[in-house]
Image (cartoon, rainbow, N blue to C red; front, top):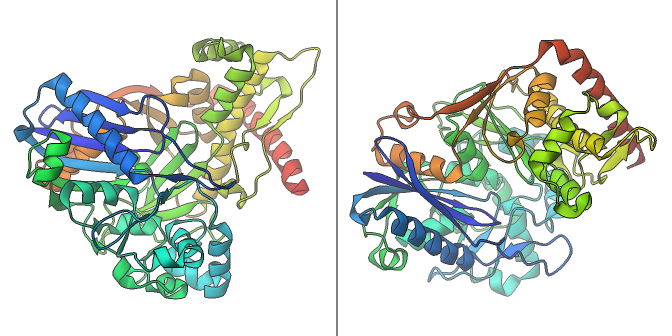
Length: 497
């Protein structure tokens, strides 16, 4: 039997098909080949048409089915990973009422800040584990305040993955993990957060039926099967936000385990069994994919907006993109740890939650025109990205997440030896790299949810580790000195904010 995994991103939509028995990925495809359109009607806004996710998903599925020639009748189940924090609104006929307000839209920031003050910080954090912030519930409040006629037509609210599941099955459902990422789950009561819904004046009927993350949540309808080129009756048995799903794809399910990604932005995601929160909401706590009322599994998420985007910006600015990333890494390797005094703060991609939603911009410091070259900039950029991770991971330690082993897919910034060695060196953690991604992880999740696999252990029994990077004890002092120099630059910038 075969398993399908979908990853609904804001840049592209990816589909993968795996052989359930061997775990081998037979084919993957993504669409569009250029980045999906994000509409910004005003500065700070970001919207996408949910229908474009569906249309691109159809193209991705068609490609992998054509390449593999798999009989659709032999597909057991489908798993869905999706961009977190988005808002999709539908009426009673399951018709989308407006474009989705997606994760990087910041219009509701002040709404969430005001709600935190009005509800009371302690009450809010003890129950929701986060400030309402700029998350999904606050985005819905913006719609209520600014588009009342449209708001009156809402039947259900959804996250992006819930929308795709609805298109496949005709049923509107969600999960506790998904609701928690929208700050709509009460961890003390283990149910929908009436505390926040009541404050915002939302009708609780807006919330879809809540189903377990791993469960048969619906089946593919005949009409959806025809559109997708699949067979009716395939089980939809897993859905999760992209970061919890990335952790799942790396078999990060238990307390103390850590997953990380470093693409355009970067995330460190640690699992805890303790219901704790950061009082300043610099890191956020959500229900992990295997969280239950009986066994706490909380995902503590650190997000750094400016990671790989800094590396790509340098690539474009120095040599007009003619220098390959491999060459950049080679040049950076010729510069000693600490970049001979050059320090870069990578915070140039919007307000950073880890900096209490401040937006200081990126800073380059310590340049000496007589000794420093572009190679120093290449190394300082990668070190600066890692140091921003270290800064956030120290906050994570205060709520019980202490990284000893960090797992990641071998992609994006983790292709760089400098990046990997610096992360291991400054954190003291062992780095493990795997050949997996979100859509493959979602396919494995589908197999767990449908019962094809008897356990997560069985689902990941053939997950292959590609490489292990141990911290270099001899270089520990050099990394620490470089980090302390970076911290001094950060302190200077933050004092001026």
